[in-house]
Length: 165
Image (cartoon, rainbow, N blue to C red; front, side):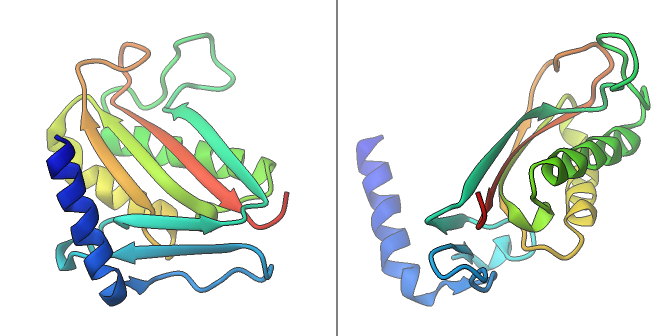
């Protein structure tokens, strides 16, 4: 595994000069967030690397799903509707980020957990729509047996970085 990791690191370092940043520098002279893609097939799907220099604030969101904020513990909205649950999760993510002075443009990493891998295309569409033109962040997609509550079909972890503390 070490040999593989070293090979991957060497490959990435050797191609760093051909990578193109998708995100211009932020307004603060000390803060910079850049998105990179080294493989053609990843462009528009997700960033392979996001670098953040001198972040003002890092925001870590725990798994966000379609849990109803005003319902009882474990109450899930949009039961059986993957797209509805995904849109609702990203709506919550946007509200949580806004409460901390961030937007989807500040997102640097997303991990999407689903209970059915056949929802991959819909999950990608949902994420892209939620980003609303912001650069695709680093993204990992995982298929698992079950999420936190019965009936949950999708859960999303998010990390964001802002220039201001």
